[in-house]
Structures are given as C-alpha cells and as structure tokens.
Image (cartoon, rainbow, N blue to C red; front, side, top):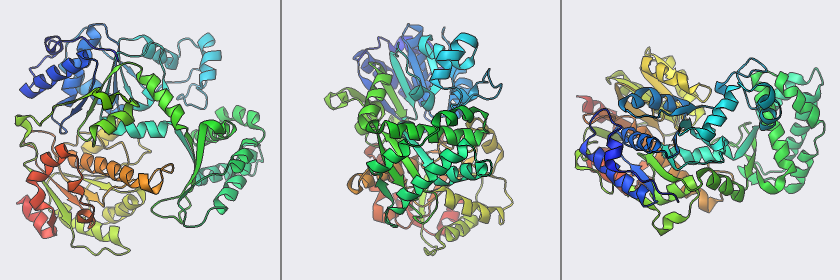
Amino acid sequence: MKSIDLSAEEVLKTCKKDPYDYQSSIISDTVSSLKAGKDVAIQLPTGTGKSFIFLAIALAAADKGYRVCILSPTNLLVDQVEQKYLPDFQNMLKPYVAKGIEHSTCLITNCAADYAICTPDQRNSICKKEYSSCKVLFTNKQMEDYGIILTNFHKFLSTQTEKGFDLIIIDDSHGFENAIESKFQTKLHYYQIDKLYKNHESSNDVVADVAGNFLDLFDDIINSIPPKQLKRRIASDNIQEISKIVDLDKFKKIIPSLDVFERNVCTDLNQFIDFCKNSSLNTFYVEKDFYNPDNLLTSLVAIKSESYQHKIVQKLFGDACVILVSATMGNLTNHAQHCTHRSSYDEGGLDIVPQTLPPKLEKWFDNLHIFEITDYPEDDKKITNAVMKSIEIISKSPGKTLLLFKNYRDQKQAQEILSSTITARITFIDDSFNTEDVQSLVDKSEIIMATASSRLWEGIDIKDLKLVLIFFLPFPRPPVHLDDRESFPWVRRKMLIRLQQGIGRLIRKMDGKGICIIFDKKLAKYKVFDIFSDSYRKRIVKSTMDEIVRDVDGVIKTWK
C-alpha cells in the first residue's frame, strides 16, 4: 500500500481551534501508522470528536498533494460534515461534494435524473457529445480529477476512477459493510411486480407482457418451495426460463416514459433478467419474510459472485491507505477485512487507535443507565404490551425520545397505538424519506420512531435526547446466501452494532445524561453484554451492569 507522509504539526495547522490532548495524541499515532503504509481503525465513543480528527488529517493530506476521499453513509451526514464541521478548519483545498445521480437535473427530461435514463451507455454515447454541461458528467469528472472528495457510500461504490486515491476515510464505517452488500444485489419484490402488471394489464402493452411472464415464472418458483422454508437457492432451469423472456428491447425503450415508481421497478426487473442471462456471475435466491413466513413480501434476489465483489471492492480501494472511523466496529480486524477486502491485516497491516480509552473519556458513560424491562406479558400481543409500558415511561420523562424497532411492521403497529394515546409530536422515519429532510424533522419532533435497520437515524444529532427505547433485540434477517452455521454469528454481530448505535445516540458530550430501555426478556439469555467487544463492554457495562433488570417503577425513579 501507499504511505502518507504527514506530520502531526502539519495536520494541526489546519485546525482553527485547539484540539483536546487525546485528539492530538490520536492524530499523532494515526499519521505515524499512515507513514508506515498501514491502515488505521479509529474507535471512539459517539460525540468525542472523531470527525475533527479525520478531517484534520484529510485536509492536511490534500493540501500536501495527496488524493483524498472522505466517505459518509448518507447525504444527510455528508451535509453535516460540509456545513457543521468543515468551518472549523483552515486549508487551501476544500472538498468537492459528490452526490448521486438523483441530485442532478437531467438535461434530456428536465426532471431529476435516475438510473433508468442515466445509464453508462447513455452518458458515454449521447450526453458526452450533446450535453457536456450535464452535472452527472461534471461530478464524475471531479471524482476522477479533484484533490479531495466528500461523498456517500453508494456514490463511491458506483463510481470507479482510474486515478484512484491515496487516502480513503470511511466515517461510520460500521455501515459500510451493509452498503457493500446492498450494492451487489438486486432484489425484486413480488408485490411490486404484481402492481406493475396490474397497472398495465388493461392496455396489454409490452410492460404487461414482460411483467406478466415474469410473475408466471415467479409463481412457479415460489410454489416449488416448501411452505416453511424461508430461503432457497433458485434452480438453474428456472433462471434459464427467466432469461428467455422476450421483447426486452421494446421494454427498455419504454422505461424512460414511465412514472418514478414504475421506472424504478422496471429498471430492477430488466437488470434481474440481464443477470439471469449472465448467470455465471450471479447466484439467485428466494427470500421470504423471516419474521412472518406467510407474508406476501416474497422476493427474488440476485447476488453478484463473491469473486466479482472482491475484484470490484479491491479495485475501488486500490493501494490507498484507509482510515476506518466508528464507535461500533465489533471485531476490528474482521470489520476492516469486510470493508476493504484486504488480507494484509493478518500480517499487521492494521493499527488500532487509540489502544486504550483516553483518561479524559473514562467517565464518558457515567450518566448512562441501561435497563431491561421485564414486567410486561410476552404473548402474541408482545409489541402492544411493550408499547403500553413505554407510554408510562414517556409520559414521565423529560426531553426527547427515540424509539427503535426490530422491523417496519412493529414500528407501524406502535405508531397506531402512540398516535391515538399521546399528544406529543411524533416523527415516523422510514426509508421513503429523503435523508436531507430527516434532521429538520427530528429537530421539531418530541418522539422519533425508526426501525433499527434504517440508516437514516444513525449519526444524526438529536438535541435534548434523554431516552432511547429499543423494542426487542434488533436482530436482522439472516442473509439468503449464508447457511445456518454462518448466519447466527453474522446476525448477532449486526444486532450488536445496531444496539450499540442506538445506545450511542444518548451520550453526545462529556456531561451527557440518558436512559436506554430494552424491551426484551431474552437479553440475559443471549448474554448480550458479555459478547460486546472488549472496548465497548469496558466503556458501557462497568457503570451500568447493576441497572440491567428493572421494572417500570425502577426506571421512573431514575429520573428523580
């Protein structure tokens, strides 16, 4: 890998304000590792100034002529870095902010650009010649040429540059693994294809023909699977049948004229059929709702082969030095390998900074209390019972409240109860939101609701947040491509990251105070606090272990 020749003095010159002693120490250790050609994992509690550390290093490196890329999970956090943190620095070269296609106006349609029209072929064959002022082309050129880029995970994974970067910084890197997984798979939901077909059935056009043929094959695949089997690899003869669907050229031509919903569904459908034609590069699965197998939200999933993913991710990172930044990485070496697909970490290619929690931060969580609420019936109305108990607590609690749910169905059910019972302003966040809107909505709300799987709530600064309620341990659905032996370690690790992120919303400054309540009687069974990473357990559990099992009255007393 490359090395980055920086001194701590050069880095600190970019800062308009003096760093804390521990930030200076971490900067010094990090630049020493980069100079030795090593990657670095910076793990610090939420709110301790990780952004200050990595931005100072990034800006100093860019001023010295290195090509730098700063990655944030969402556009909301990209904007937060640009607007909230960058003004604290003085340097010659400011980052170019690169966002996805949907943030550009297409000069052909005069609407927001989307992937149905703005394909690589379209950009290269027509737009380069006739629409040279296109913002998408300009952004991609800046990604190739500019000295320092600030962008989101998806844009980075979608844009390969020939020049590459010397230094890549992944902020909130715990989410980057999920971004890679979603980037290399296409998922088709039955209900969406069915809706598409019904919209066009009466006109009997090419969309109806393609969607109808696909639904027939979809039905054949689903009917061949035992009712209780949640996932299954699709047989090659089924894939061959899908690849033979006709009239795809006509189908592709009509996509740009459809509305946004239909364009997106048709684009995914066309891509899935193309994957079936190139089946050697993909693996195909059926996926059912893990939490409700009888649900009609059945999907077909196409996943790029591991060798293909490995090749692309390695090319994106090239020989750049990488800094991973997060409060919740889990096993640091495994996490770094999942993010960069590098094997060098087994040979000492990764340094962990800081090795121990700085003394100034040792009392960071002293005013954090974690409870497991057990005095509610756990029957078929489990979520209802938990929500009713939560209302008792919310009504007697100061400040804002964040409610995190295991899945969307629980979140929706809880909203119906809360909205009919509580007069407080409630913001219901789901993946249909634009990330740019979330912060302003949260600022105005008293109660924020989200699923633990949503990326939108992570990283946002919820002012006056005093209470986080987590409704059942947020285990994700097992990936369709993992067998049972591999899936539980995977979902447990992901659950812990989600759980730690939820807890981390509370303590955002040195004197922060807050309560986290977990409605799950399986907490002791899974020994969650025993399987936290060592560094996280030392920070959290030593001051909260005596608070784990309490009833509602015990929680309310804590406010006093």
